[in-house]
Image (cartoon, rainbow, N blue to C red; front, side, top):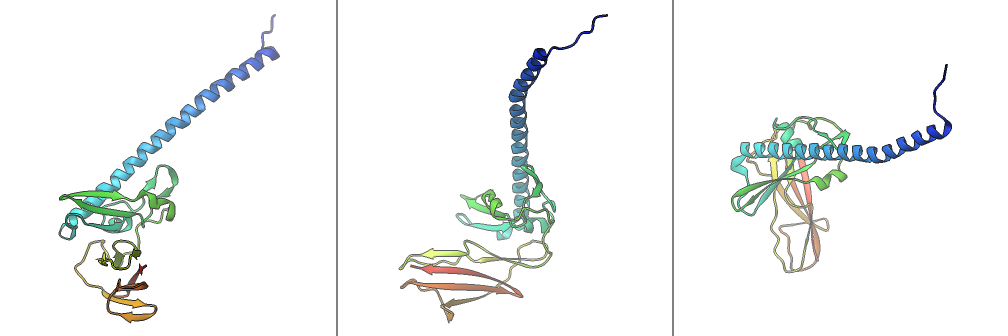
Length: 213
């Protein structure tokens, strides 16, 4: 009775062939997985934009005029019920899109653009924590720190006040301005200086720094 098997050289040949196949196949598989995750990521971004649009429709009377914009965050859209509590990030299945993710509605020529600031993802916690606390919110519009040149004009970007359901309310925050710890009535650009604007609504408070140089 003949016993058939592989010689050492044949086994080495098989191992080499399998190694070559792995070198070819594994990168291709990884590439396909990466492409699939990228597509799913885009789907999630488009879904968030859709939720932002629905939120905008519900707050239509407060939407910006041509050339202006308003910025909220994903947590506000969650509170309004227009987005899921946890939206997973397909690029990293252990993380979610953060509640603080900035979302902007911009009016361009009478048409609204819905913008997700994906660049902020690297600066925010991406833990899956559900919807934010159900309470009132006071959100700055524009930048927290504004740089002005001497002689220029300052226009305050303002703020948004939202209720516990994530909807804009028509309310006014108290505004105070200080320069070097001393209260002043307005921001002067005649000379250099750093100003702090404090906006207060109920127990909520946010600040903006304006530097004139």
